[in-house]
Image (cartoon, rainbow, N blue to C red; front, side, top):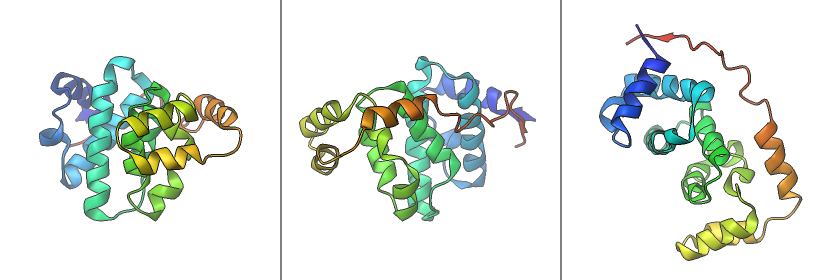
Length: 167
């Protein structure tokens, strides 16, 4: 038996080179889900490279299978938002725009971790005109929504002691 925590330890050692271990196929899908589950309970800022790579792998999986938006991709986007790095808005934007399901499931607030102006500036500087346009046209009390997502118990039902994952 291998637990999500054990797989997370392996992912931390591998850093941003996870495709071989956590890539395509059912085994990769299950391993990524287990690692994301572990990150929901024991992540730190040092896990950012692992989280970004897991998000890329999830994006590739959804693109390959055209399988809507699962909890694994949603959790990755939420944790990237919580990191607060505006550069991650590009990766979240990519995830949000994969298909109709991801567009609906990945909350737009995840794109503005440091506010609308920061996202517009980042997107404009990096040639992400569609993201810059979207963020520039956002309306409503974004700060209220950002706070709500940061404090929301959305993933609180995740077991504190991850269940074993079998290979």
